[in-house]
Length: 187
Image 1 (spheres, rainbow, N blue to C red):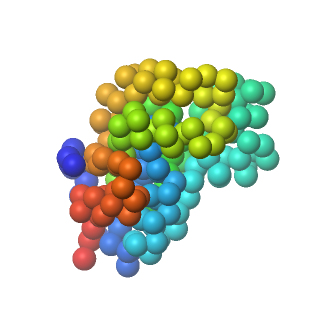
Image 2: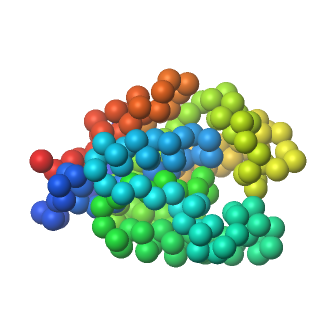
């Protein structure tokens, strides 16, 4: 666990102890949505999964958006959704694996939230993503090969997040405990 952030409290802390949203970043399959739901419950704030928000706004699945319009179109919509969510105040936001890689989206997240990189070993990720076949970047491909390449390219960018915690095959509640230890919660 490392802290790389320099966030100051604005004095506008909510009952949750948060003065801004917490944004979870990291690879697909690391558990951002599951961890996010538990974390939000513990903090007493709303939880939002950006992929679910994008699907609801677009009226189609992420896979359909990728197929019909391409990744650039998707990333632009993703950035707009994240900007709106951040503007709504303290909450826990789970982002898609590529959101933080986008320069404009990362700048939004870094400027106005506590960003937490949830990291996991390749074996944990492969086991988790192999349970369901809905991820556009993996369809028809070997998950280990795709994930290894993505990890190599994305990890240096994920490392720009304010905080870094590891997830493993233990229950997600342990990852939540790690996050709660590093977040600068207001009393």
